Image (cartoon, rainbow, N blue to C red):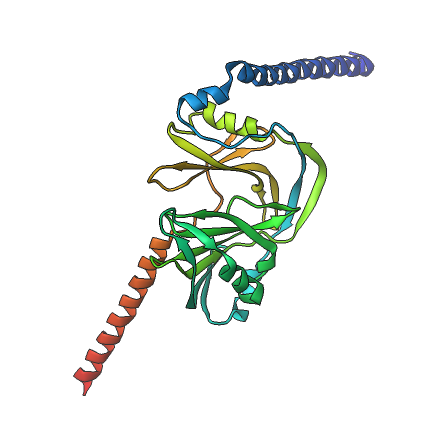
Length: 305
């Protein structure tokens, strides 16, 4: 039996060509669906629907920027350099540097609105070299009910908004900084060409249409940031993300995240950090444990005597 390899080759080529045409048609159909969704959202006038639900929001831009992906190399500099920090007690665990300050940093607070009037003491603390790589971070948000100020590591002039590059300062009931937690994403490099991201307006609409913005709430911030999408043993990849804060009366500020390339809702944060209350409770528990240990040791010594 003679096998016609040339004929088989032609059949394979035609088969793959047909498959490519089919996949292309599926892709185009998907893009058309996405575009029609966008035009339909305008027709429905989502902003009016949000207002009807008593949802307040700032003016939302329709501009679409072009943002590249980032690559960062894994860094253990927080662990290796923590000994350089003075007047602090530090512990490094699971990629997070926990620091308790020997002296608290008092802040001026508007008691009625629980807003920080002046962040200068924290800025001075950072600039004086009391935080590793502190100059690479900028203020991101203040969470009044959690009594936390969050600073984000800046990469490509855009903050990292998923806690893999952040400093969270914890305040006690007197609004004095007692401790902080820090993560560091490493040095960042731009990867490939810039990609078009969805607009502020589209990101907020995506949240609303997915029931992620409750009635009687306020969208108080919509900021373009980065988040980690891929983590390997020696490197991480970061993609653009919309970081959105939603405020509900007498409730903690809720953080919502939307992938700025796909418009999909991001449901989890990369790193979960404890609240100021948890920090104070942990500190109190540690002090109590040390006190009990000293008392047990004293009783043992007396028994021996």
